[in-house]
Amino acid sequence: MTTVIAFILMFGLLVFIHEFGHLIFAKRAGMLAREFAIGFGPKIYSFKKNETVYTIRLLPVGGYVRVAGDDPEIVELKPGHHIGLEFNEQGKVNKIIVNHKSKHPNARVIEVEYADLDHKLIIEGYEIDEEDHKLQFEVDQKAFFVMDEKESQIAPFDRQFASKSVGKRAMQLFAGPMMNFILAIVIFFILGLIQGVPVDRAIIDQAKSGTPAAEAGFEHGDEIVQINGNSISTWDEFDKIIKENPEEELTMTVKRENGETEELAVAPAKQEAQGQVYGQLGVTRAFEKSITGTLQFGFVQTYDTTKLILTNLGMLVTGQYSIEMLSGPVGIYDATDQVVQTGFMNLLMWTAILSINLGIVNLVPLPALDGGRLLFVGIEAVRGKPIDPQKEGIVHFIGFALLMLLMIVVTWNDIQRLFL
Image (cartoon, rainbow, N blue to C red; front, side):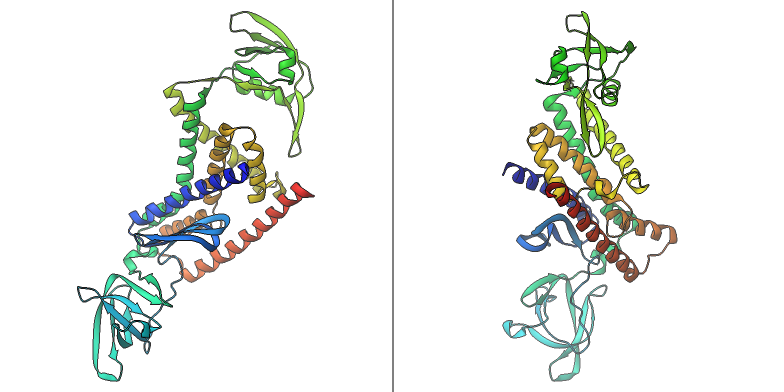
C-alpha cells in the first residue's frame, strides 16, 4: 500500500507540474484553456474555475491542457439551424441554446442565416415564421453554447492557440518540460538542505554491515587517497575503479579522521543489472552542509542527470540499447517499489530523475509530443506561414497512435520481466 500511495503522489506531482506549466503560459498568452486533466479516459472527479474545467481521469498515463483552437470544436452554427438565445444585462447574447430549447422558455428562438463567432461575434437570422425582417445579435466574448444541457464557452479567434505569436505558442508548448526541470532543481535543492551536499573527495560516510567494505575495516570519515599505488582525488575516480573491478582485490590507502594512514585490502562484490556486471563496495558517500553548495547542487545534479539521460537516449536511437530496456508505467511502478523500500530521501531523488526524464522525452521532436509540436511552430517561423492545420493534425494523430503502440509494447515487456 505504501508503494501505491507513493506512486500515485509521485505520478500526480510530475504530471501536475508539467501540465501546470502549459496552463499558466496559455493563460498568460490570453488563450482559453478549456480543460486541465490529470490522466486520460473517463472522468473520476472534476470542477470548474475561471473558465477551466479541472479533471482527474481514470488512466494514469499522462495528462493534458486542452486549449481552444488547439482541439476540435464541436458546435458550428450553419444557415437554417434553429437556436435559442439568452441575453445578459448589456443586451448581448450570453447563451446559445443548440437543442432542447423547450427547457429554456425565456430563450428567443431564431433561424440562423449567418454567424461569426470568431471575429465579428454576431449572429444574424429571423424569428420563426417572420422571414421578412432579418435580425442581428451581438455575442458576448464569454458566451456559452448549451448542448444537451452542457455548457461550452465560445472561443473568439483572439482566445485561440493559432491566433498567438510564434513566440507565445512556442513558450506555451515548452513550459511543460521546463517546469519538470525546475521541479528537479527544487527537489535536489531540498535534498541538499536535508542531507547536505556530497563532497567531491573520496570520503566515506559509512560502510554498510555485511559488505566487503565493512569486512575490510572501512570506517566513517575515511578518505581514500590511493588505490593500488595510484593517487585519486575525487569520489568519481574512486567509484569508477570500484565498478570496473568486481571480485578483484584492490589495495587502498585510507586517511583516517585522526590524520593517520592505513592500507586496506578489499575485493568489490560482483553485481549485475540490465545485463551489465559491476563491482560494489558497500559504502555511502560523505555529505557536507552549506548554502552555496546546496544551491549549486540543485543545478549541477539536474545538469548531470540530463546529460546522462540524453546519452542513454542517443544510444537507444543508434541501436546500442534495445527497446526492451525501456520501461512504461508498470516498470516505473516496480522500480518505485524498490526505491520506496530504501527510504524517503531516495524516493525524492527518484522523483527528480523521473521529472527530468519526463521533460526530456516530451521535448523529443516526435508528433503528438511537445517537441513535435514545437517543431511545427519552428517550421512556421522559418517558412513565414503556418502548415495546413488538417495536415498537421493528421501527423499528430498518427504520431499519437504510434506512441500508444509503443506504450503497449513497453508495458508488455515490463510485465514479462516481472511475471514471466
